[in-house]
Length: 456
Image (cartoon, rainbow, N blue to C red; front, side, top):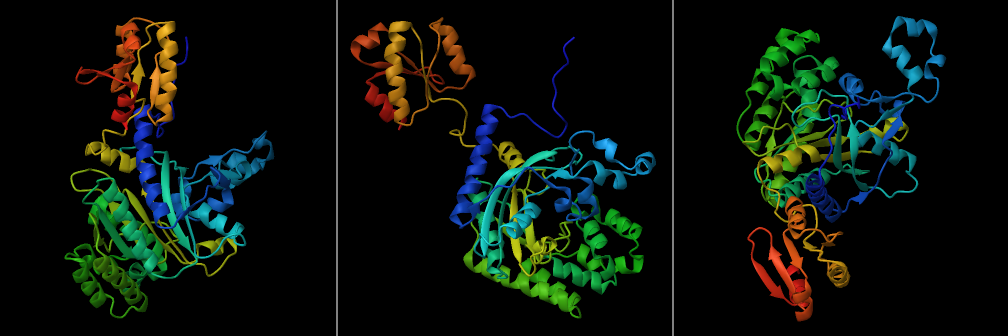
């Protein structure tokens, strides 16, 4: 009995229509990347394991897909380690490579490796798949695309302002009105940790805080206690959990709360600068909002951090995120190179646009017009017109066999081809084409040039 075909959980096949729609989203993002001066690069699907491991925190490391070494990989494993079933000892001996977890760390590796070939500040964009061994659920996959834009070699906060504007430009073009660009600053989080006496546990603190939207305040507090943060310290966080108001009001409250924290006040100053510039420049459809609980649990962020929420009414996690990393390249030997970047979550953006019914009718798979095949003589004449149509930018197809007209019409209908052309003996004699609208059934007898003009 033949095995039933399947694909791994967390992955998907894409139909022609889905591919066209994904390309529509990617092309929109790509257009704005290039409009803002970002240049494309690509990096390998997999990296050396030591390039990736240790860069995303303990939770991130667990989600990295490792690739087994070639050949008899078990023969080189220490017998004692193998019998102990200790994955942390065995894994480095059987796997030297891993699928990339994101595009940021490979980009940092690229910058260091090619530092003599690029001019700083270096603005790059990348649209490629990444892999995470996460639990598949709605909007969360094990294989998905990221669309990243980063700038390295500049400390200027004007880069953050530009990235906010870039988010707004893309989502406005996609008609995703009402997105919220959440922003925070890791310096503020460091100041809060300092205020509650948990500066030595900053990573545990931020990883737990970042889950507030997902699991609620009580669960976050429980996780902090489990990580060794005292209940007395956690009680001091109540003003943070209940922070409300507009951007300026929230900053004023936090300035008072962190009045004795030098690093915390530095973070507030940075956010004030960005908000002032964004308000002055204006946003088309998005809203910039200060979210003090936003932490993004990646170790390499050091300054501003971003996360984008979909318009209200759509149940979806973040559809974009990013932040500043002051010294990411130092792990590869290049110190004092600041960077900042954002990412668009293609797959989640697709789902949101689909749920809201915002894909334009023009974004579809297949051809614009199908020539019906009535026989060898008619097909030969039609082929000349097919290539003439194509030369004029019209996606055109001739049905390959002279079969029943009804069958050819069903083919056009199933493939959502909007028009068919009937070119029989009468039409050939008249030097005309019978153009049929498959949706309305309306038919027009037109000269070839008139058909071409109609599609233009």
